[in-house]
Image (cartoon, rainbow, N blue to C red; front, side, top):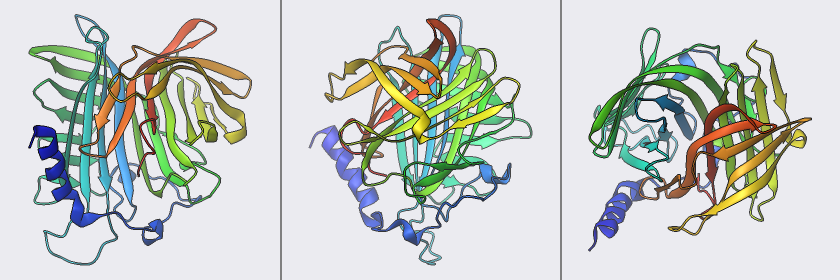
Length: 357
């Protein structure tokens, strides 16, 4: 038995007893009108099926800039049975981390998965405090902190808010399709100031930079007609912030789309499904999976257009051992009329088979 087969067998042992339910109606639905309240909503929402805390950003160091991604997922395979046993698998905690270096030419990526419990894996309610073994995302008095130790790379970072939270959609109710139930509660923290250390290989350096944090929770996001999504979260150089996404149908057409733009002075505008469209400018085919990713796109929002270009092409992450998915997640440049106006991250899912939530 080779290493990959052994790992897949082990993962099957971990996940098999907690298969996902047939209907998401056993979980609490996402409905419009619920106010997002911080800081208590920074914590876990176990009555909902799926949740993630997602931080992306750019870091400056002596050698050259690097991009990074840290994501913690909490998923509840079935509604709470009421079984008080500590061995009852209420939640799975999954974590991904990656570093993008253009000189390296592809992602450095790591992943973990475990059942919640015994103080080794958990997502705390009412405050941001998520742990998976020695990986940790938490909040302090005036900052957030993430620690991701590993063999190929390590991150030890602190994040400080410089702007108010940005509520996505209708005051945090973010539609993902025509059906009202296909939605998430969703807020972002753009322009986080970052400081800490990053070790790439054996070289550790102090770093500073800027990041974007997303927190979403839901019981049913993707509609049956959708196979995946494309998403951007961009910190603009002038202090503005831009989030945009599209849900894709099997034939590649747009199933749903939305965007939120906030100026540096705080004026916020949301763009609905009829106002947002994506035009592909250039594609890249993965030599490992054969997936064909649009690594350069133009996003149209009303009368405004922005260009998004991957910092480099090969930023594909294979996370089939933890989530069953392969996706493209990488550092990107935002430009307008041929001039750079911001940096952030581009995410593309569902290009290697339909994404399974």
